[in-house]
Length: 299
Image (cartoon, rainbow, N blue to C red; front, side, top):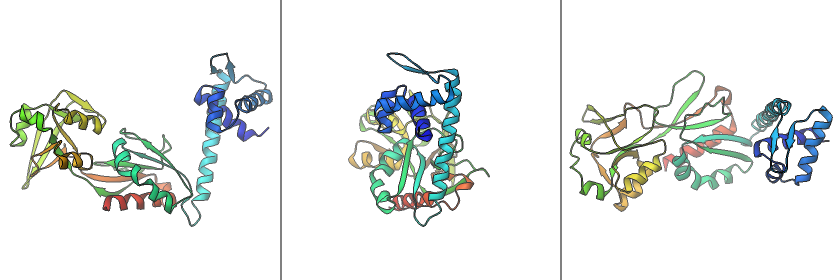
């Protein structure tokens, strides 16, 4: 029995909830997956999985073995990546976390360029608007929009910047009070990005003057495109990244407001940063992705 392949079969069966799904994921016949797991159980003289006609569940012994098997496979993957990273080319697995819409709109359309230059790179692109724990989530590179958390445990590299625009639909503006100054927003429905705080102040800067407005509204979301869609539907005024709404503004679907001001949620900056752990310094895979992202942001 191929022990390594058997470990992979067990892990995938637990993760996918069945032998058939595991077989599809591994590119193997269901019977082969079943045989590998049964071989493990015979060798260990312990039942790892409970079988029924409808589902597969993990025994107590199976859960403990599964967790150790995952650790073994991840350690092997890291060892492979470390060796691959020592050559002259960027090779091997690279786990990257990026904000959802930034990944879809800015990165995804240009991935062909990255793979053309680095054909041996194996990219796992995770889209999430949540703050990722690089070590806990086993992420090699995280892209952050706004002020990145400074820590000795994480390397933060600024690779670009963006602006936030205050936007609303023509329909909403036609039936609402004018927005002539920041304080005007107190009379408006504001669509807010969820940063995890109950209240939110938008900060306006112009001619050296800084002003903050405690905004309120019917919608808060941790996804920028949800707020964009709500703004397009006339639900209120949104504060969104320029790269997300510039096409809508150009087409007249959204109107930019108070464009003489720099606007931000609180004191958050407009930085685009990449974060990675100190042990990734010198990594050719990380360097290849950072160079690719810099090139995209420079236009």
